[in-house]
Image 1 (cartoon, one colour):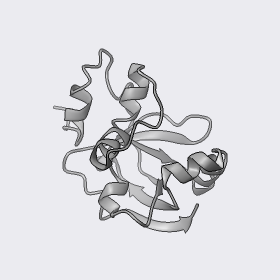
Image 2 (spheres, one colour; image 1 turned 30 degrees about the vertical axis):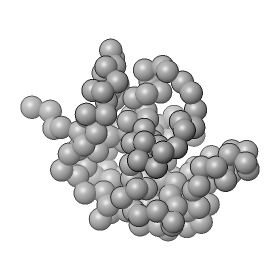
Image 3 (cartoon, helix red, strand yellow; image 1 turned 90 degrees about the vertical axis):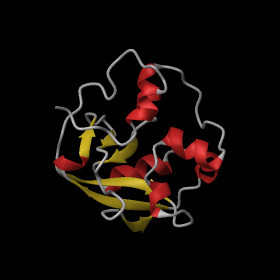
Image 4 (cartoon, one colour; image 1 turned 45 degrees about the vertical axis):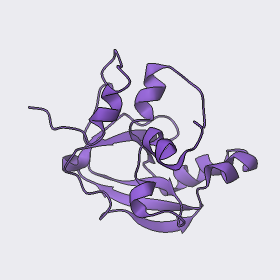
Length: 145
């Protein structure tokens, strides 16, 4: 039996035709995620769609493709600190300010925490946590962006 995802309801609400996440994999690794020291750790660990809804933000990017919507139901992460910082620094300064991120958090992911997509060339992946996972206790802010 498959383990339930914490935000399966968010995926289901979008009636995606394709499996989400597509081709999930499991791995133990240190992951890095953009964060803000102005928000609670729990808010730093919300999927984009849920974060935007909670805080009343207009979607940051308009893309109605199923792969994009699926990605927004997971947590955007990087497999290296350098990749997280480099990717952020490559965003236009005005957009960086609008996003509100100020720091990088580190999370020691374990297989029992959830599943992820394969990394892309920028060492980015989406993580879909299991219902019983406790990423809040594992996340810590480690560096400025």
